[in-house]
Length: 328
Image 1 (cartoon, rainbow, N blue to C red):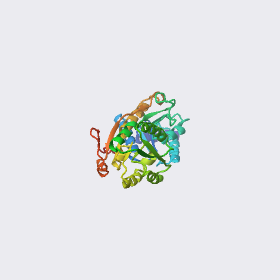
Image 2: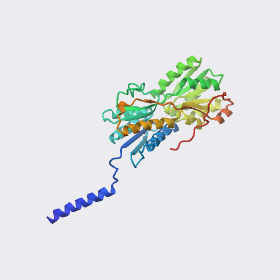
Image 3: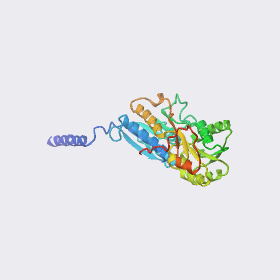
Image 4: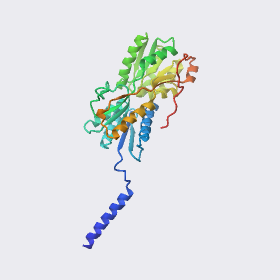
């Protein structure tokens, strides 16, 4: 009888100790898993915007929410593995930054019932992530940030008056690129411009593809291509030698040496994406939230590059200079 009483006492004692050393909110903290296809400043800015929006809404990592993050380093197979790993963790939300990351997350979580919020997706319909922007048709929502193709081409004509052909390098494996290229060609035809394209499948192909454009184009316009933007310096080495200006859809590329970017502020895209994550954490269902079309367009110009290329910016262009550095 004494032994039984002692066992009950010890069990109660250790249970009390365990509760004392375990944070009261450890079990209640929702888990948010963030997956990103590759590390480059644009996607990093989106991720930072998401985290900052969570903090602003009362969800601070290790206090009121638990955040886990992984990066596929541009490898689609690794992105699929990350998605499967995250599904096994049963998070409250999976946040997928980029089209490839969103596609792998959707495939991995289809039977698990885990909601997905995507960011940095140019065309979620063509990428088969959603049925439409208003009605996603699944346990998924997110933000889309289609670059202003027509205004980008007009900008190039204003800055490079002699332009006849514009080159672009892209990875056709990213659905957003194919969609954006179609729009570019349509708008270019209206302006009497030709789009000359070179395709690549990995970042190591970027240099040779860019070299193949030299002598054929008077400017380069890079889309929101994760493979190419992550290897931007390979583009710039070639274009600088030929004095061909590079325009992009990625603001942070201007800091890295591109001439200009007319594009959505990626940090603002991240904040908008973060707001959707907060709505899911607050109990809303992803299937009831339309995709948010983010319009945060700004023009960034690297004036040092403009001077080196002897290009004069037309009067009246609202320039934000190089984009501010976002902490990561």
